[in-house]
Length: 510
Image 1 (tube, one colour):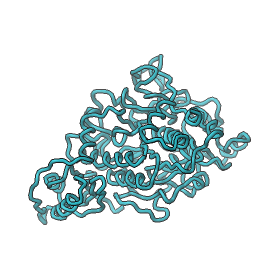
Image 2 (spheres, rainbow, N blue to C red):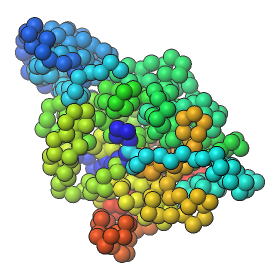
Image 3 (cartoon, rainbow, N blue to C red):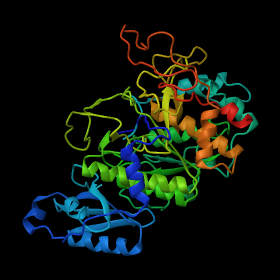
Image 4 (cartoon, rainbow, N blue to C red):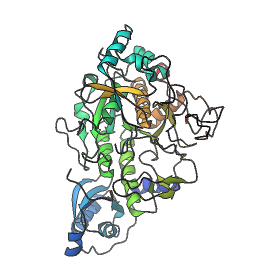
């Protein structure tokens, strides 16, 4: 798998670099006018074709001028989003980004990958385990009269009161959660009743494709988005599992490359804009934008990526969409002074580098207004893999943990059971699983408070959370005698849980 994992972001105190990117996205900027010299024929022949994002002022005159400059620099426009001033382009000109950054009206421009475009990043931790037919039969035999057949193994629902919340308010059909991911298998019997095809698409490559089934996973092993969708809104229909908000709708917006399964920036930009324009109330983002785990603002390509994705998610917020993202599975402290990033770029050869997380950003996790979710296990303890950070994590939610074993489930499996492509079920763990639990609770809050804005929803999400406080003993989940992370902060807000672990029952009662 690529980068389906946990996410993280800063509260509403925005770092200088991100604030700059946000302002660039929606305000007139100053750029230097310069001639746009085409590349030589020999350079074009030797250079691979790359994808680029070109970020401009949003007036029609500037957009038209920049499109012409793209052509003069031997580029082709794939799609333009005039409302946010983002143009996706392809070019084999090795100086394309450098030339476009000199064009009047261009505020940032850069390559979205380090490897050539192919013909054709999520945040789960480890490979899935499918539920066998014998296990499913045993679970069904133990199911209570009001429970779903496989619900006995869903410790996560009980941990946040989602089973009880469903009896009060399972969520409104007027609320849709958009799963920006590897695709969703809407033919699954637990997803079909709540799936919104009219709000689904493939955004692979940066342009929305709404043809029937375009949102489905490219391959059966692209299971991540289907698992996430089930955690949010698997129906209570007597078939298999239940979601946190089994009465809301779920949409699939596929952004994973069909071959590499990487989540490139242009696809994510398309997804946020599509979700906003289709009236989706909540998006779940269990991934980081490839190819950089952290995007540093002093690099022109990475800065352009931050700028483009931020414009798109801010546009979604302005249109009424609350965006949630997983914190990441690296057990990184995002409030620290430095982090070793030894996985970037992930589409070619990684080059280890030490970054400052206040200047190099995990996106969309660290973007302003995005709700950052860390993961917990059945003991309400931070999952061993979950990234954390005081002032960075907003809330926590069940993501599973192989070291925290539930005592009240038939399987004794500490991971999360949910839907898989091909009408199957399986266990996964990761902040990828935590974020959809929080997104489900956000959907319940939106159902209860239909007029709430994204900012108000985020406030309510934090208010209903229950904070266990920092551990009173050294954090050593694997029991090897070494402290694996240090929690900073108090009972109300800290680096492991932010404002606390989500509470679905409180979401529908208060």
